[in-house]
Length: 102
Image (tube, rainbow, N blue to C red; front, side, top):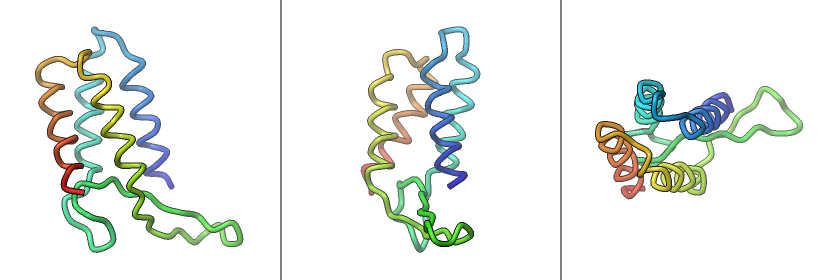
């Protein structure tokens, strides 16, 4: 749950910035790349982890293989590529290409 909230905040922060915020955008893209999974037994490679919380038990989280969550991140990154610096574009492309493995 925390990871989902963090990713949402990262995406909002990344795309509400201006050209002078390029250091921040690059750092946020690095964070997205670090969150993206290379290998995990519960999640496919290239996906972003997500979790479900049960309404009857607040302390139980279930790993959720959510293709929509990963696709939404890749789609959002791709939609904003024209605003990236060359270094940010390379990083975003790497993240997007890894989602294709999923």
